[in-house]
Length: 209
Image (spheres, one colour):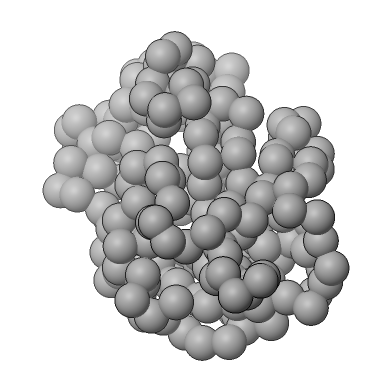
């Protein structure tokens, strides 16, 4: 399996009228989230976190204030992460029928078993309601992935960031997948409600931001 897949998370904070606020965004199918994503090949983590902040909030000018630490490995024993965008095959060989949809780099999936050069995996994609609970299954894929396209190590880096851009309290932007993201500033106290497992990220850095 491939080397560690690096992830980054942007805690963008401002103070308005004496109240400290955190920038989050509402994903149309996956609830309220913190800007985050996968480090691309040849990219360092500082560049990656600024890019992810731009892609998910539209902010062009963000500044890293502090490195907040990392999770050395976010994966459970029964999980793997896609290290390179990959087809999923119905049988453990490259001539087998693939699913129409490929799984993208950075996606966490469930590990089922290994057979020589292939790993059997499962991935379920949910749509969430306004209370961050799954209500529909959008995709349910089970099949075989070449071992070279998987990793058992996912390291996540956390950054405290700021911006000098003047923004509204809430706005919208179109993502590269065609979704409409809705970024907005929310008070840090009481602690915002974020989808799982991102709520654990916030718990990890909360006293530092």
